[in-house]
Length: 105
Image (cartoon, rainbow, N blue to C red; front, side, top):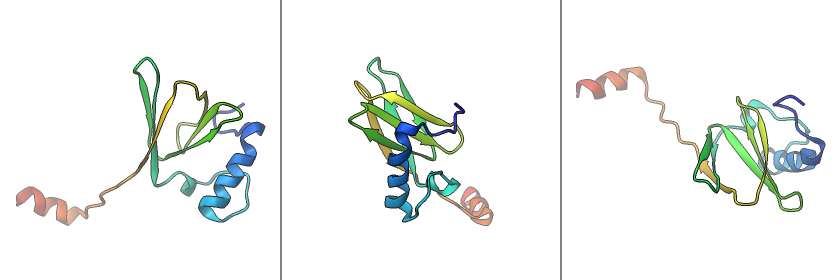
C-alpha cells in the first residue's frame, strides 16, 4: 500500500468527510481538501508530530485516528493514549513592497 492510498476500512469516512466539507461525491482527495488546517498528535511518552495542510478523522469503532496530509502521506494510528489537536492554518501573505516598507520602517 502506498503512503497516499486510502485503506478500504477508511473509504466511507473519507467519502463522508468530502461530502461534509466540499459538498462533493468522490472517493479520492484533491489538493484543496488539505488546506485550512494542521494536525498535532501528542503521544503518551511526550513526543509529538505536527502536520501542516492536513486533516484528521477518528473512528471509535476501529479505535483509530487517520491523518491525511497533502505532502507526507496518510497515517493510521491507534487512538488509545493519543491526543489530537486540529488547528486552523493562518497564512500571512504580505506583498513584497510591504515587506520592504516594514523593514525600512
